[in-house]
Image (cartoon, rainbow, N blue to C red):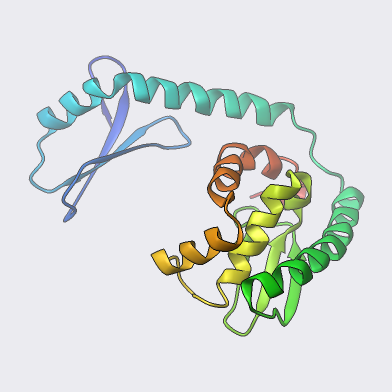
Length: 195
């Protein structure tokens, strides 16, 4: 890790990529992914030019961490109850969206997961995160549609996203909500379920 003169800690990862990208890691370090030919002087200049974006990202990360600390985790009993409620609720939502997507799920699993909101196998097994029940219904519906559309396209291609947006035009707004607020939902995981 290198320290930028103005106090921005950063780490450089060189690869065969063509462009430079910046990402603020959970530990507050800016990860710079850059082509092999990019020198540290150029990277420092880019960091300086993106300083306001970096500071906003660090502040947003700090606020999210403070908000997560205020969230009360579910007890084991509450977690089990949430899973039961989610199973019944999502079974109904899948049944509602199947004809709109034009597919049929073969099985539904509901779990409390640390990283995934949902998954789908090519044989029709849909798995959803019970924590989605704590999100606004339109957000959890967007994940249901996302997973069902994988029965048409087992990838994240443009064709896949066209199908998702055909069925659920507000998908991008919901996806953005989950990206911004998902950490608060995950903070509800019971203490012994966390890594």
